[in-house]
Image (cartoon, rainbow, N blue to C red; front, side, top):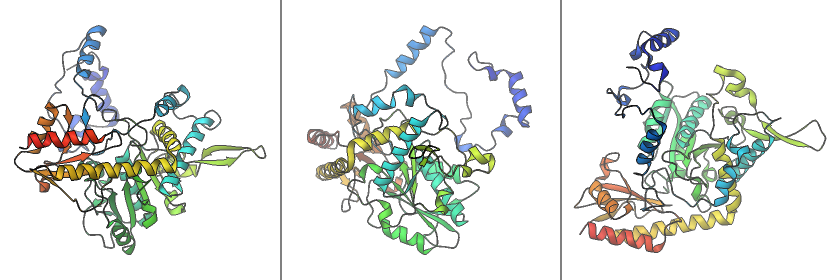
Length: 441
């Protein structure tokens, strides 16, 4: 069926495209897409709107159905966080010289390269690591890439998961590592390329055994990869302090708004060792002397490892990066400084513990892992009502509750993951506890 907005929907054009790539039909063309991801039915789309005004009215109607975290009290987290974003972050990243900069070279884009170099330096200081990449698309991509790096470094093919991870991240790993590495098994063995641990875990726990997982990786001759939320490193010891080889994650908490699924960018950090640096897929910027004595510039480091230089023989693929978010995170870190990050981390942990204690006193709620530290998230189990019922009841009262975990972590029972940030006041936390007490009564 032809569509007025999609030129390649015409049967003749489809046939020409299939012939050009040597595929017999659409099924062969999409053979690499798992069956679990296939819709197997037409998309539920409205009839094409030929008038611009009609289309604008329709889209605005869809957008009006959204309730943002500014319009309701929200305790959602699980990978996308409503932290405070200083106004200057938005001011800088909306400037045309940053917003429109794409892939210029040093002679034409010196300022952008310096901004990214500054970001790398600030992240390196926060992580206590030497080398930080220009951001990947998101934190999931950073983790997947870090594990592929570990496979190339060790020549091995298995990844062991030491802590619970986001189910969506697991889906990404299954896809990106497919055919090259397997996931699962013990934290030992001659085939072990990497041990991956999240810090904090997806369920919010700052696992005191994390250094043990790193030690187990090294004992097996594997690479210790730690996925870390950088927002807590003003108060938590950086993974490098207990021997992590590769630290990775998402910089969205660092001055970037949640964007309906966007606003994400991934970082990868290592020590300045050739065996790691030569495996980075993305661009790295360094400060170098120019032809003029005493003058310095900013340009690519170790360029010949990238797909820009080697194309299909490069270390994975260097394409569009989330560089604008890297610049934004650099602005945020420069504003906060070490004292600001420490104050922020202390406030997050204090608020989180306050809400944990408040909800633990509500009949019908069990706070999970209450005896260990948490940064800003924690899981609860409900009795008497399902997590979905509680979530619906909170929404009716103008509150976004925790992320429902009942389907993704069925072993936890009727559970949800709550997130607290510096934007929550004590009154907000008390209100949530009071509303839950009424709902579960």
